[in-house]
Image (tube, rainbow, N blue to C red; front, side):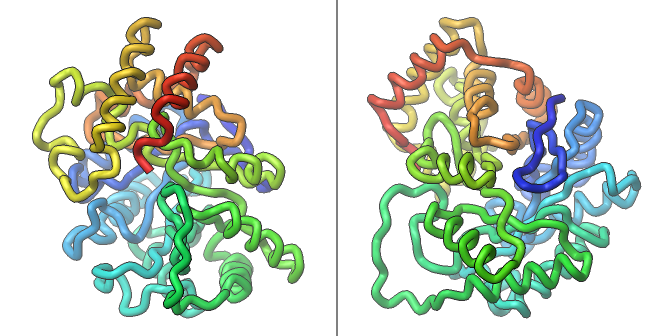
Length: 346
């Protein structure tokens, strides 16, 4: 395994991060533990979860992912050799079963952290992230910003910074980061953190894949120049980039087939682009999954690539991509497809 410094911190995290959002919905507790054991054996030391998980989030499965990880951490011990990250959910209709108030006030941040620590059976989190912004903006990799005149949000960035500082001082978290954030949001946090001498965000967890390269538009430069790197999620576009849907190897329980409401990666344009990426991979002796993940792994603004899997076979293939480097010819071919069908899965 290869390791990279997580931005401005002293943390060395594995190039591959183990994602967990299927645990509690598509994966049982024993399967989660099997994945964890294998990942750790392969040198992964970075695990990402959230109070929202499993996905799709339902009242019956909310928090199960953290509980599954917590039971494994308790059995294993040696907590300090791992980097564990979680997230607080922001405002969103239908998620009131998480907490009565979904915001990033000081009170809610403290309440959410305590809930995650309890489920994870640990005393601290290495990285604590805002799962998405409170304000209405182009989140989850969506292109374009639509002004919402009736948005009740008021700038509370300083309160968030002060709350994170308090959590750090209390030993509850070591660092904090953002997720599904925009370039303006990241820079606003960094500016205010510098102005008030408070700890700024140290990472950005946003979608990034062959089908959604919106991160490159503004955030890539922020990552490099401000040393706030990307933790890329959905690098396989819910499995579409594995090629199984095009090759007739998919099953009814696969994510795109099972969760029709999660249609970001199921557009005609996404399927068309994927078909062309599959062709490039096959022409170069690679599986579509290998090419898709290797492309993300080598981006200069990336710190760690968050991979997930519902089967051990998928997990093994995904983790093995850490040592694969694409030739410039393959990257050029990928970029040609991207120019023809740009960001078909925002």
